[in-house]
Image (cartoon, rainbow, N blue to C red; front, side):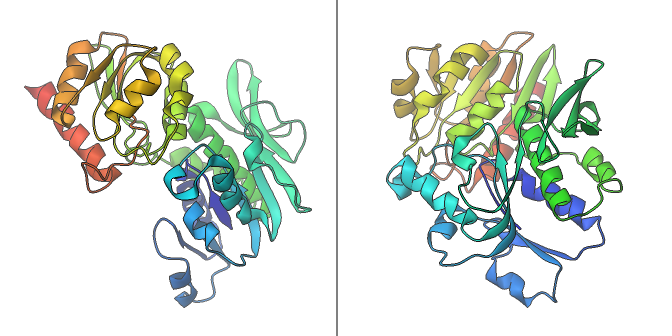
Amino acid sequence: IAVKGNFDDCQKYLKAMLGDSALEISTGGNIGDPALGLLCDKSPDYYLLELSSFQLEATQHLKTKISSILNITPDHIDRHTDFDAYVKAKQRLYEDTEIVVFNRHDQNTYSNSISRKVSFGLDEPNNDSEYGIRSNRGAAWLCRGKERLVAASDLHFYGQHNLLNALATLAIIECLEIPLDNLIPTLKNFQGLPHRTNLIFSKDDINWYDDSKATNVGATLAALQSFSRKNILILGGQSKGADFSILREAILLHTNAVILLGEAAQEIEEALSDTVPFFHAQDMRSAVSKARELVRPGENVLLSPACASLDMYQDYIHRGNTFIKHVAEQSNG
């Protein structure tokens, strides 16, 4: 089972749910144990791999039961030269698979292979090969075709991108012909993962969210689109050749101000200067301080950098923890 996408939390949902099934699963790839290292495991029923475009680019042959590309947005353009090359690298995932699980909202995840096709999306599913959202008496349900599987209100994670991950997870598990009845409680109890649009502090009708895992433009776009409230957005880091203009509409709709830090600060401002007010911060402490000055009741402060972290931090975890630390310090001061 191979999964690729900017919202790689799907692998974590799969690992949790498959771990509660009767199957033996070995998990690794781009995140966790190296794929070849998993061959030392004792005959698991399935290998569950999350693979990067870099790994797929260097892969000569990969035969899978199920392959899924969750979404494709521009990333690593400094490595792949242009977006078409990046898409081509990811599409190698589909070259020899029995079942393709793709995102109906993203044509770059579609496949021209002769494999069986199953799709997921936030719209209503039309048949049993489609997973999506249906409304029942005003409540949103995750469904396969017309069958209701789990109410969105029963899930503990936030954001439309996480609903897409959950739908992809349900699709992949059912493609393995595993009954969902005993596994739905696992999905309901899943608490989400650190640094993925996590609410870390709330006071005086102001919410603070840590989305440090948003290391590319697509992840930040998804985070912004998940909120009905306006945000004070903290952006910046290493750009990886990203096209920040993709964020223009979302910033206009979902933010009141942007605070910039890191190497890409000037590049981001030049791409988006005609949207909302921009402010520069030397470090995370000053970014949090500026956000406290700007934010008003009824708004959020959102760290969702759209950039890699290595210009200032060890990794996105270090960046997120630094944000959490300064929010706590300044909130208690």
